[in-house]
Image 1 (tube, one colour):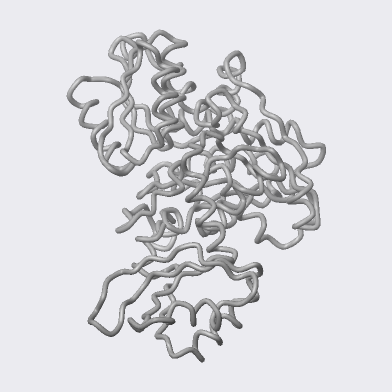
Image 2: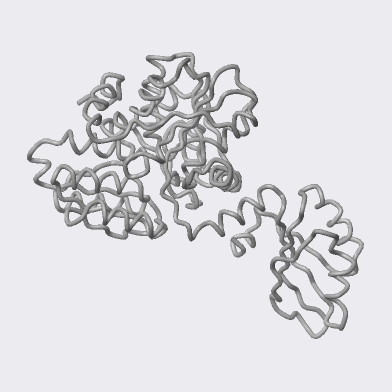
Length: 414
């Protein structure tokens, strides 16, 4: 087996996958087309078997195993979607497997893994991050002899995921000017890039990764994969602390641009996909659309890959919160109130303007008998109203300290 992915491998994967996966729709999106001033199409991998493109890579790898390897079974680590693909493949091919997931994996994804795998698959919680789960799965593989099914850093996985690019070109009436792809460990964008560079070399390839887990950008700046010191796991399907050794050189050589997308922008795109387009996308599934909103108008079609739709509805409060903060409608402050009658009434009457609502009010502690700080969250009707609010706060006798989103204090709010 070659250690570098080729377009021929992707063609072979497409034949292997044809009987078991869906050829997902490539459909125009009016909302994003209006924002970009040109045609935008969505590759709907949220409608794939297991509701994610990950099944393509997992099934291709497992279906390629020898009889001896199949008897030994498989093991993998997953934030959720890869595990579902592995579980689906195990049940379909009659192979036993274990799926290690981090504790941050939404319950909905864990339950789906168990349901898809049936009695063939065991779900094991292995650490708080994907990388910890991956380490536990590797130890299992070494101890038991089970084949490790990598979610991105294996040419068989990458070949299966690259069939997304094969389908995009087959479905486009004209070659896309730009393809925007979500990036975690780099398997999907590597596979798509290999196919596009051979069959549509003029297409611009843009990778979109979460700002709180920008491991590919860090690797490119460093000159090779390295572990991030900190990781925001909110975009769980793309929150990978270290990109692949096999994926990195392909991204470096073939991808035009890697952009970091603020998690708040991802949340805004998730809500727009749901409320305007009727598409339920998980955070990673909204990465490409969120990145596309920042692109300049394109001379040709732009394709955004909606990579997955396995979202836990219990997370929507946090999604809404992050979105409102990102678009400037929700702000937080530490306000020190004198401990005397009328202090709060003054704040309500003299500081707050029309259409400005308090959505959080909580005394933090009393410093002394005279003053007491409170956490105050305020929602605005328009983002442009912030300057007026800040001016009234400055003119007030109260001590007001804004809490910016980048502040460590902000982690206690979200």
